[in-house]
Length: 186
Ligand SMILES: Cc1cc2nc3c(=O)[nH]c(=O)nc-3n(C[C@H](O)[C@H](O)[C@H](O)COP(=O)(O)O)c2cc1C
Image (cartoon, rainbow, N blue to C red; front, side, top):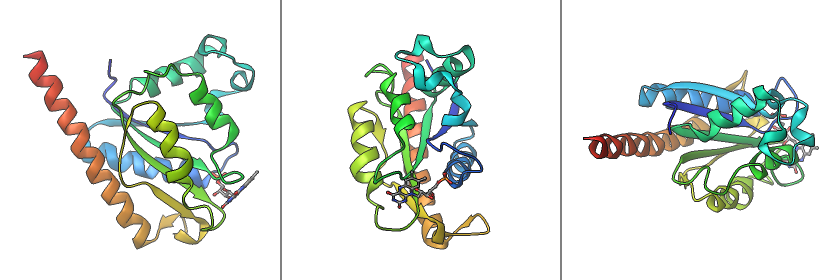
């Protein structure tokens, strides 16, 4: 089942968040490119029931609704701040609550932010294997950005180039999947 939305999800644990801001801008661009609506959530939106939850049914209703929106998204834009060389712990906990089949075949753009460039492969070595586990269509272009890549919140031309590349890949896949669904419904 699809909700016809591009959904962003960010693993930030505090606000304001550069990761959430970045995920918002990529999600909005992909929504524009595909003609779909968009919504963005972060770990904070899931509230206090998240840490204690051992299954989705332990979450409060608002958090359960967010999980459903993520699962039913047409495509996802995922992001996390880099913490100790990886995604944040609560970000992983969200995905630990999902069924292994919940994200199968879903187009996903991966992003991460960090304090410097030393951990830029977090997108390839941490995030990509996680979503490979879910058998998602993880797009080839993943984007890592550090504070130096932004001026007054605006990404550098290099980062913008990678974002546009990822959006081109994702919109191709979203449109192809829509075409296949339309043919199947005929
Ligand atoms: C607990 C903690 C661990 C961190 N570990 C790393 C790290 O291993 N590598 C890195 O580049 N930055 C690290 N950082 C910096 C954050 O990744 C960086 O500031 C990030 O952009 C913050 O995103 P946010 O504004 O969305 O919270 C760490 C920050 C915190 C608070």
